[in-house]
Image (cartoon, rainbow, N blue to C red; front, side, top):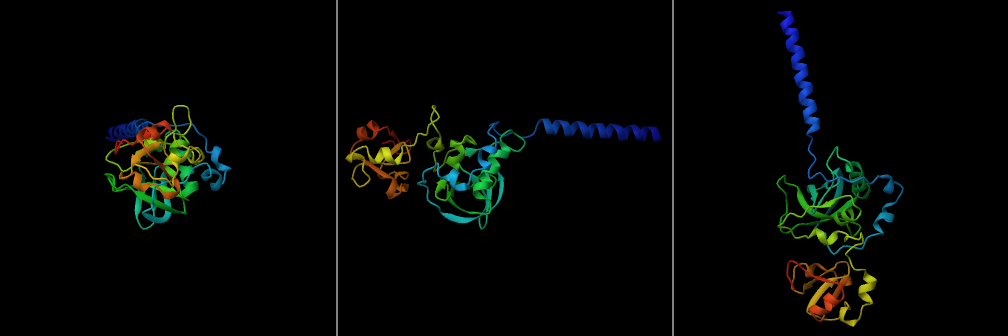
Length: 245
């Protein structure tokens, strides 16, 4: 009986080890998105150094609170609200290459700092009860920053107030965003002080009807107007996919 008991114990240990190996081998990897960007790229930079690369966002903060915890590169906790999932983006999961860098990038900019949230009006929370939002740090769109730095991939899941493809660089690696300088110097028809039937932001490549909900979010300092549809297109803007001007 002692021998049988010992054999059963050995068999049980083998089974436990086998299940552990299988679990490790089948760890959740999400979409499989990875990147090989080392955190050393950012570790010696100040927050101002990083933030200065990006234009102010047109997103409007609806809630402001202290970021108390960073779960990973696309999920944080904000005092007074709870868990927040960065809308429109996806970063590497735990145990996957790139996880540490994306998480530390967000920690550097958010942890123990006050952030603002533009919560998705079309879908406030996900199935886990996390708020879906654009996270705003010192006036910058952190969701966009993750995409443009290559630390995240687009995860567009309609219905959504936000269209994250507008935040990504184009195939040449340059941002689709039109610089404020090129917009302000492009002629009187695109002047923010002019009047027109179409509107755009100096920080975006999309133009809208003035009645579009996206157009209404554009701040006055970034507003660009056009007298005609052809005027907007000739200056390199594309029609909004929501209002379809």
